[in-house]
Image 1 (spheres, rainbow, N blue to C red):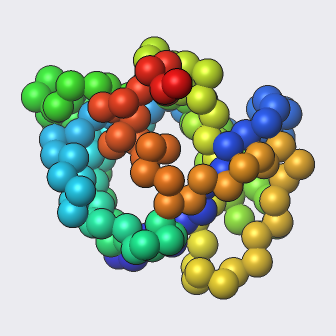
Image 2: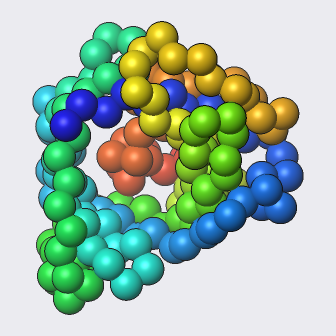
Image 3: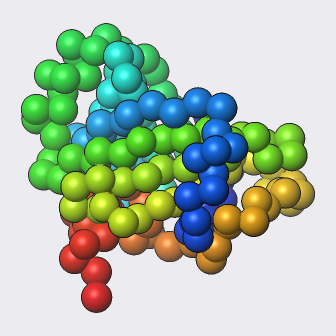
Length: 156
């Protein structure tokens, strides 16, 4: 129930040709308190409810608990979420022994593309694809919970 994750900006759309799957994600937040977030996600036809704890200072590690829920439950919960729904397409690409998840955002976050990689431990070696740009691990403005409140299009 501990998530170890690194995030990177993406410099090109070369990952699309490398991806082995993609799907649409609609998500909202029932709670965006700094100590915990409660997320509702609709991933194609399946719903998920996720609780995430506060990140460590470096942003690498935090508590995460997730359970699947029905599509209708997710749709009902999305209607009562805080303002700011996230709409994105997620692509998955194999890189070394890892799966890289690349989110291409739409709506108020259009233009933002972020790659995430979950690790088994903080010191794990990561093979970085050529389209990885600046690392933004720990930069809270790139957290989906923050993008729902301060969308990419509003940044200076």
